[in-house]
Length: 257
Ligand code: COA
Image (cartoon, rainbow, N blue to C red; front, side, top):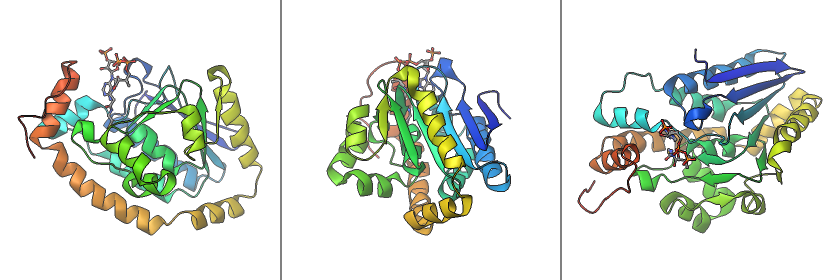
């Protein structure tokens, strides 16, 4: 349990809100656990027809908590790696997932959108997947799903250069449905979720299943996961995490591997 993820069921829509605004909704192990619980509940509770993901504050999420990554890189991490549960639940989900994204959506904040069915962006949205800057590799099957969606060139620039994508571009390249003024974001996403809640659940589930190769997605997540876990323990990654904590640019010139 964590107070940093709030859930509310209303009219068939399970709204899941990231609520750690002072840390830009950076995701801790406990938060991944709560997100996985919410997605699992959506599958088993007949009252849930749609999941709506949103974040409090000015950022959707700054991605994985970098202090957790730093602890994982030195072996002092005490969590349970709930992130894997979350990613598996996301990959398996049959209920439609709608996302409302404002400000920064970093790392998994963007890659989770590749598993959402409708994505609405505020005009402040900035999608970022700077895995290589952190000496890491893409996750959440994004190494498969992002190039499939936006092409290799754009996906590579996002992964390797950490090139940000603004709202209008995200819509143009097929990462999102629409950009709206920030003040209207939640209402727009809520309206879409309510519209889906009125659609026949069985037809929605089959449509989603037909549009996603879940086996291939799970396989890619496993491949990524092995390399990601190895990368976390490298000198390169330790330098990247130390640089973030010390608010400086990383220097990879003296570290290899
Ligand atoms: N993990 C842990 N804490 C984070 C965080 C993260 N991923 N992202 C932001 N925070 C914390 C900051 O340390 C800061 O904490 P403090 O107030 O105690 O110093 C607080 O959230 C606000 O962040 P700040 O960097 O001051 O906000 P900003 O508006 O200038 O920048 C971001 C926002 C998201 C661009 C910037 O915080 C960032 O780049 N974060 C790291 C993103 C990242 O690399 N995630 C991992 C992806 S795999």
